[in-house]
Image 1 (cartoon, rainbow, N blue to C red):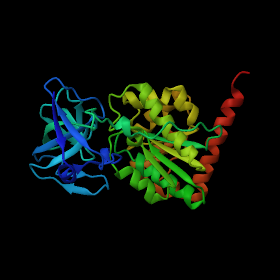
Image 2: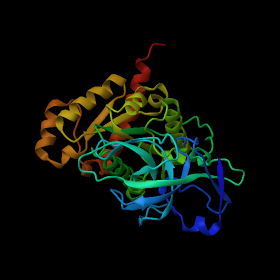
Image 3: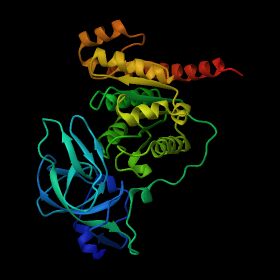
Image 4: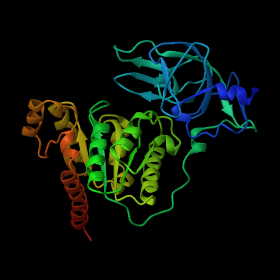
Length: 359
């Protein structure tokens, strides 16, 4: 195994991705490389940009989109990606050439791509980033500490949907806006997905007092991560928000209800214990009908449907005709009276469920 010291000047020239934003860049680093060295999910990788493709810019630690040039050295994280509208990619098995499959800084090996996508930007790994003792740095090393247990938790609404780009993040932001306008201190978090700053910053812009995402729990992306680790991630982020004294929490679970990790999370007892109710986002009436039915099978109550379908009054009416829950647009969710009403319904649904349980 080859070890190469990283001078402060070289570290200073690195284009550091969003996924690595919690790294202290003032410490001494090395780069390790070896023919048999296999990256783990979340290992930080120094790589040279070998060719510019789909991602011409890298989202850096400040969430600025930084233009990439051939020959740039970047600091990214090794992980897998699941994005039906973009790339499907797997964790690299070695330190051979790989691909930049997400602008937030994920290095992986392409498996398939949507027809609209160009060839991914290609990377040649220099090696894995290590500390002064030669220990490879993983994002899990940068995770928030274990939260202090809290006996009382705020009411919590989970937003899920049919797929990526169904309107989940917009729904979270709209609900946050409504609750914040009602003078509640709201915490928001995204517990699965691929590391990027756009969604958390939208939560901030909507008024969320506290915002976290899975990168704060030490994950660059959540595809192929074992279920127990995903559950730990979600419960840790929820506990940290609770500990920061918020009045309500809104959680986004990425991708769709047919996605393996999403489905498993919704059915997990620990996730059901922290979730009071669900708002479902869909792009059309058929997706809404399927999605609400799927969520009902988990036992979680569905408060409402929203999403891209509400951009069309006709599609919204079509959905409402076949659903037993209301359909709301973003303006509706941003209304403080409605958002507070939904929060109260979520709390009431949990209390009703507890009363119905046998003694």
